[in-house]
Amino acid sequence: MDKIKILWADDEIDLLKPQLLFLEKKGYDVITVTNGHDALEEIEERNDIDVVFLDESMPGLTGLETLSKLKENSPSMPVVMITKNEAETVMEEALGSSITDYLIKPVNPNQILLTLKKIVDNKRLIKEKTTYDYQVDFRQISMEIMDNPDKEAWVDIYKKIISWELKLDASSTTEMTEILGIQKSEANRAFSKFIEKKYVPWIGTDKENAPIQSHNLLTKKVFSQMSDDKPTFFLLLDNLRMDQWKILEPIITELFRVEEEDSFYSILPTTTQYSRNSIFAGLMPGEIEEYYPDWWKNDMDDGGKNNHESDFLKAQIDRVFRKPIKHEYVKVTNAAKGKQLLDNALNYLNNDLTVIVYNFIDMLSHARTEMEVLKELAGDETAYRSLTRSWFLHSHLWEMLQKVAEKDIQLFIATDHGTIRVKSPSKVIGDKDTTTNLRYKVGRNLKYEKKDVLAILDPKKGLLPKPNISSTFIFAKEDKFFLYPNNYNHYNAYYKNTFQHGGISLEEIICPIIRLESK
Image (tube, rainbow, N blue to C red):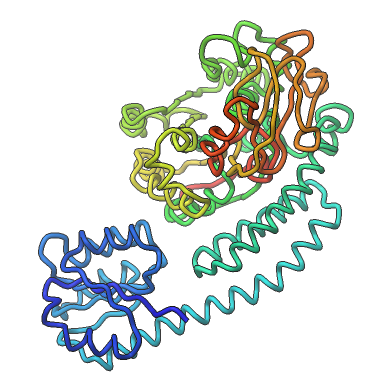
């Protein structure tokens, strides 16, 4: 069994040699630092620390300041505060910051041992209970996957998988996390077959059995809930997966009460250009191209593909309400626009409907494939969720929500599509006009691995635009990503394990739509 690793931060660490020697004799591995900055650096660089001992009165970054920063990125890390100060306010602040225990100097070795036993045994019991419970639920989820699930059952399966991802994250149960990853892959394999069978009928001959999708999201979930007595905010966080919503939920529900938590299915392709335009237009992409040819741009056309969202929104509002609705559309793509959003927060209360598109998460997923530092920061789903949480807590968006939460408002939080970490390359051959997206392709005379894709040979059947008379759409299934034969190995290494979207997976298609009200 690996030794329990303790990180002990104290500016008088040399005076603690007897305690350190005592712990080492008891089989503990103690890493020592003399200040808060070094403590945070150690925690960031290592992933094997089990508990942190933190001196409260260190110079520079105090113990409480270090604790606050530590908990932002490692909320489940057990921390024992060690202090000379018995003042009640200090203890209240420490306890309020979720410390696990505290000790008063001078520290008795047996007190330390008792505290460690409590923490380590508690972690072990939680880990064992979580492992056992998942083993039981594993069989149940597997049976549900094999039981020909319908659109509602797939949402339930996906939510169960997410719930276990978060529980296993918290308990650091590596073995079970690997098993869950395999089960998630099995679920995506079956889900891809389900979408392959159902998608075209849902938008054609079997509309009555279709789930809520991008093009009817606003009419079915938002417009129907608007009222004259309180302003409505519709916040679209681009690229927000269901698991990322569950990470943000505890923060947001400090100020807002969840009235309804639901989901919808993103249309294909699961990309901003298609799904978000579809949400705001209330139409499928092929219909947008037909009714608004001056506003729609195909993949290979020059110019921005989402420049007319506000126009689409106005047209849909006029079509649905047939009366004036005071509304405003705000898109945030950088820090300056985030600051403008915050500055204008109270002005939005004068609108019937304020639509806010916040692009940060989408930029993060795209940037991850370009920037080595982000590859390190968001190397897997756990890190991706953590980075999302950290960004949100420090964003202008959260500050803005805190402002408007003081008033009586209705808030919807949704997205346009999710994203999946791609792992398996699939070869595609196309001409120079074939699109570049890794999860879907539009082109002529495409050659591809049939088992890896859903192909819509006639775009009209998918209510998709038709750039050329022989255009075909293909969508990657499961965790596949498309590569051309040229420089295949180079691009495989470059894109493997990056977060992409455009294709068919639980993560990309099943999206959150949450209705909240101010507390």
